[in-house]
Length: 82
Image (cartoon, rainbow, N blue to C red):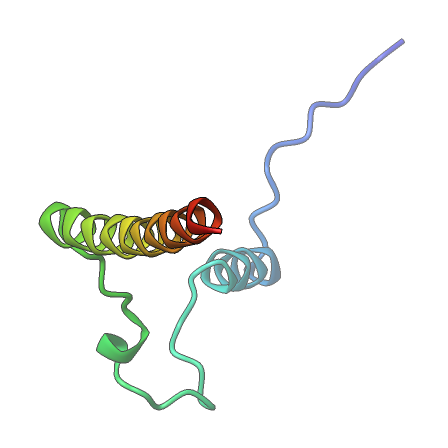
């Protein structure tokens, strides 16, 4: 059985197709989106900002717990007086 070894196709049509195929993978600016690139960038908070936000959140939670405990304390005092 004879086999015929065929080399790569290098016709002008193939070269043109290959160039379009490669360039199709590169994303270019869309015509419908004229906003600057900076608008699309998301601001990432620093580690200090994250710690501040966490502190504020925990502080609010603790203040609510304190208010609840003070309310329970008042209710217990009222029960004792009766």
